[in-house]
Image (cartoon, rainbow, N blue to C red; front, side):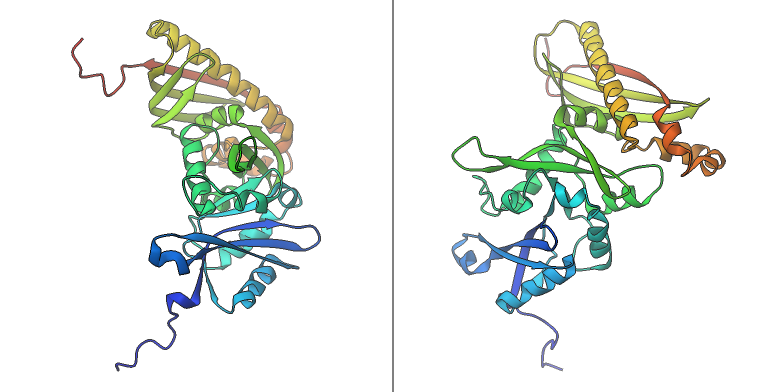
Length: 342
């Protein structure tokens, strides 16, 4: 009874994986970032990069343990980076299968696409965190707050990829090598259709995608001349008489810029947002890519009609769909100043 757990593994026999990158041509090339626990006693964590290859992702990862003779521990992994070359060939489907069937990974692990080599992004050395996978995870989260990239846990990407009526998206990263030290740089959004990456959005286009797609609050909305804090933001979508109507309600407070009066600022934001949303929708309809979930809205509100048009006719209908944006903006005092006497 006091013999202990025969199936347990001591921590010094584990390789704690903080992040993975997936590259390669005919074979998969996987780089795993391992947290070096030997320096933990001095409170000085450092990364170790181990690279393997294989004909499948699982094969490449299985050969990783043979390099050091230790068990891989993926529970603390923060991010998986996949090069755009791989994703354009439909490799997202293989990754979904692996993560969906491997309980070693958390469903909240972040996925991201990279413009060039995923390994180069993973092996950058940020100034604030010795483990780049942790820094990349925080960069994605902060970019989402700035409305410049989506923050995409695996379980959301899985649902959006597998469900009809909506297409998946991932944050897009590259390497910023303008300074002395290369740094990870979040630069927009990767668009998918049927688990295949079809195009990208810039950070500016991503802003309008996120506002149209979901509730946003405590985010930063920036025009050419002003920056605002979104105190509350809500979007709704309805399908009526062959037309999609977006209703977007935002309550903003001015952070930076000349205060030209609430009505003038409200008109400025509405004009800026209308132009951005309509330009974004034109691009998405040309690609027949639906990351906002317009098809899902039709499916949920008009299931019989959806069943009659999906999948054969939906692409043509989507590309010709009329969209109206009804945007309501309120400019309010900053929450920190609202209770202050004038």
